[in-house]
Length: 116
Length: 112
Image 1: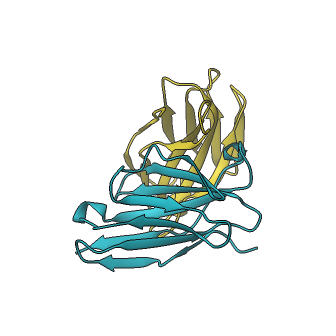
Image 2 (image 1 turned 90 degrees about the vertical axis):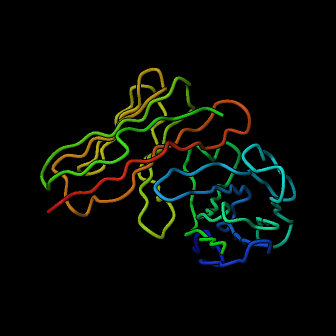
C-alpha cells in the first residue's frame, strides 16, 4: 500500500507568488490533516478536512491560506502572496475514520517551502 | 486547543546511558502518542497509549501514560547512536474535532 504522498518535496517561491501543496492520503483514508513545522520545533495543527468538508481550520491563518479536499483528487493547501515567514515544512497526515486519531496518523514526507 | 509541554528540548548523552523524556499537560487527552522524526522526513508513529496508567514496551523503549491521562513519559534503556532523532509526543483532544496536538519535541543525540 502506498503511504501518504506529498508533492512537491521541495518548493521555492518568490515573495508574492502562490504556493500549492498537494497531499494524496492513504488508500481508504478519508480524513486529512495539515501541519506546519518550523526548524527544531514540533508540528502545529493547521486544518482538518474530510472529503469536500473543512472540519476544523482553527490553526490556519485567516488570510492568504486555504485548503480543500475535493471528492476526486488530492487535498490542496494553497498559500497566496507568500512571505518569508511562510518558509517551513508542511506535513500532511491521514486517518481512516473519525476518532482515527487514537490509532495514530500516517504522515507524508512533507513539502519544504522556501520563500526567497 | 490543549497544550503539551515536552522536556527536555535537547538531550545529548553517551551510548549506554539511560534517559527519560517527559510530556506534560494540564488537560486530559483521549490518548497520547509518541512519534520519531528523522531529518527530511515526516513523523513515524512509535506507540499509542490509551488507558490511564498504561505501560507499553518497544524493545529498549518504555512508554507510560499518566493515571490521570494528562502526561506521558518515554524511557530509553542503554541508548544507542541509532536512537538519535527528534521525539514528539502528541495528544488526541477529547473535545471538538478530536485532532492531534503536538509537543515541541525533544532532540536526542546519542554519542558513541
